[in-house]
Length: 129
Image 1 (cartoon, rainbow, N blue to C red):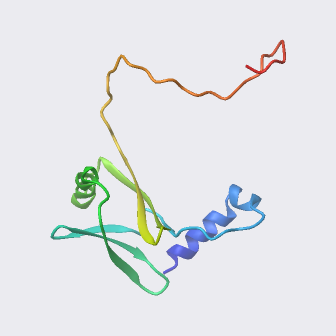
Image 2: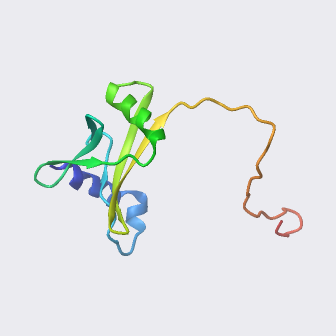
């Protein structure tokens, strides 16, 4: 399975990868062509390439909100685009972070939330605002 080796090469030879002085152990990242989601009964499983074979592991869905999205991926919905998947170990548990792109409806509201902006300098006074 060359997918993992090729992904590592892409990360290390990218513009950001060339500037790194020392690498740390990063979580495995699988690009969108090389991972798949499957469902047997009510159990979802994630498949991804390993060094010698393809692994398939059962996964628990974090929230019921995500089940319809996973079902849309399984049905081949063209309005949803899957992205990369990362395998992360945190507090003795493994997690699969899966990115997806889909259209969401716009929401009309009258309430506004503030926006943080970086400080900038006035051109004529040299003061930081």
